Length: 279
Image (cartoon, rainbow, N blue to C red):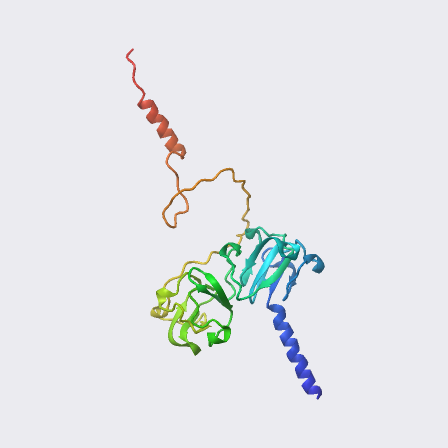
């Protein structure tokens, strides 16, 4: 009887421990340093746990979580995907988080509400019901032999892969046609012939050698928003704004007549075109 009781208590402790890590861990300093606070349930007011306006970095495991700058989930809020966030400055919430709550897997979140992509050190894959990372999503950090069990069979149309490589297959138990996804963003699974056809997924060992013909088309890179060592952040006041058309992928350009050399050439042209008067 005592042995059975001890076994039950041990199993309960493991369950409680597993639940405890399935949530965000906030750190008092950037890069996961200093005092920390972990929760597996919503916290309406960080004052009650002695961590109000103290968080500077966070690690999120399990589902998505919403963090807000005011108590009771008010003020400015952003949604964090599972992953590592070495700095909350990029989302404007450094030392400003006052409440947090989990986001249901079935809840649809507009892209504008998400924080910048986390650092992909946690091996995981996020599937989306619509192309372009739209609609309902499903996140996993472990293999899923049958998507029927998680209510996402033949539903995935786009995906984001963090950390390591993942193999997706059109049939359960990793059978049928399969493709290996490298870390990155896949706005559409149609290019690999797996749109609305994925039924199982598993991570690929880092030491596993994969033939090139087993890989899916190259993904778009996942942005790395980590703050670099000794990098200084500046806040600029926007005084004016106007639309500029550029080629896809273009990040910098000089508009005609705005560079110092262009202005000097313009002045030189004006002087040379002035009428010459006979003496």
